[in-house]
Image 1 (cartoon, rainbow, N blue to C red):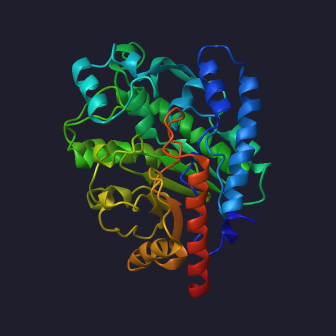
Image 2 (cartoon, rainbow, N blue to C red):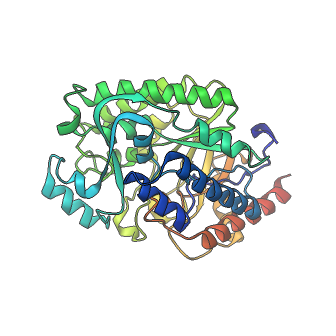
Length: 385
């Protein structure tokens, strides 16, 4: 079955799946230099098979590999790129511009400094091996269903890797580093499209920070504040980066995932606000689909995606409560007031295991949430078909 033969209201995930204990141990061992790339791939290969099987059993139509070989959704690039070094948040405390403020931020946001790792530019950034092509080929060999491949977006990756004290000897500015990121991600998207990927998703969660905090607060995923004080200028920069890499996707279905944070079960630490302020910029990003979170009140009213598809977040990956199919159908009905049925996909708000050492849920709860989504999709198909 190809991506073009997906059923009405396709069910998918945002990307990540909880890692088994052996994967977590192997990822940590790899960071210490005690696990070879071949051994890590062998261990993660088993976990990918389990993740795919869980999705298929739940009734997912568009599957991912669960990002099993990634420490988190953006730091994994340190394994694939020369000139990038992985730092713990505790190590970042030594190099951020405002050490005291960064520490206070981690406390306020409920982010343990030992649990999340960060890629930093410490040299000229060059591709050592493909970022996701090998993952795609492994996944393609495990399922007959359409597959989604996820990549960090160019704006997130640029701001994350730009650590002024470490990067300025190699790049004069974060904009200069952005050019290098665009070249690498553009080539990767072209490779994935040529290989036959059904869906390529770019993750850009930092965009919400720009509009909800008006540039005054930084996320722990970025070591330094934006160089520009005007968030609109920063959004223009983000859109320009996305436009440049997406031009190389051809006719492959592409998506942009924008959320409000997925590192804590304490919803009060996560950003709140409607997507409405972002709409003028999201309309300009040349993607097929906007993958947005709408399962919690923090997201506000559903906004129209314009001519794009909507990846509608209908379950919260951070709770143990299993949403009922009827509740999910109700959320879809709200979206149908602004989006045609043929352009709605169903997905969780975010991944179930965005950060490997701090998953938001276990595989059992995640599977039940996906099954509820699949049952809701079945109910909707009976009505709309």
